[in-house]
Length: 110
Image 1: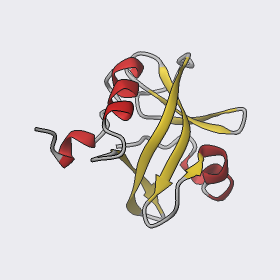
Image 2: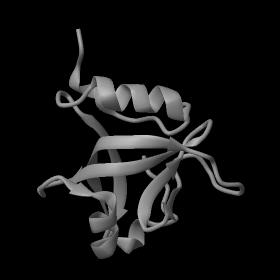
Image 3: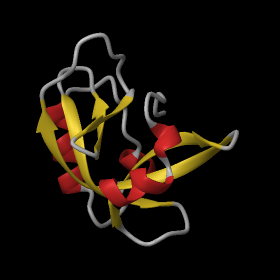
């Protein structure tokens, strides 16, 4: 039985495992992660992603940018986030999200 807690992403896992989890758990329960927004943990629902090479000198869970799109370092590889849904907002591309939330870059997601 799939539980809501199964959707929490652990960025220590490999990019392949996380991508499979994102695909399998969409739309319910969805895959979520948390980031610091103005001192408060805010939830992000990851809708779609692709595997991308892992940059050097970055930690698991660290957010970086590739051509204006949001990407996150995983235990093995990285995920380029295509679409996401911030808490209380509509689904949007990671480019749209970064335009208004560039403070997420270099943060470590939980």
